[in-house]
Length: 146
Image (cartoon, rainbow, N blue to C red; front, side, top):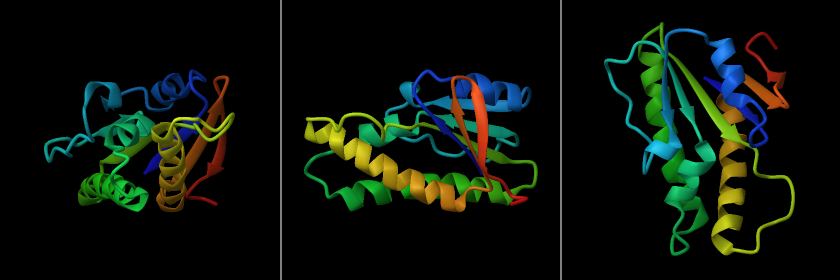
């Protein structure tokens, strides 16, 4: 799994398109109400973009934050199982860093920020590679070779 993060509108998508120029299937959070389900027929590089958006779509102030976090982790685990089933599969996750700046006033937005941060921490532990992209420039934070 490859996790790419960075600020909003800082070139993450363009960087991923250059890094993986062919053979990618993209799933944008803006096109789905929840995480897409892995397809057994996909034998390629799959990019899931907008992790923070999927998390926000799951937020319900009635649910405990750990339940929302676990629900998103279970969705991720389905994709990790898909990735491991065949050698030519590679999962690329793109998530915007929403942890900087002023803490939001609205409870729903604070929950999104907190849960997204916890979720990204788990991603980084599991990822084989992590890149941060700011202003179109990438910095590798973690790689399999490290």
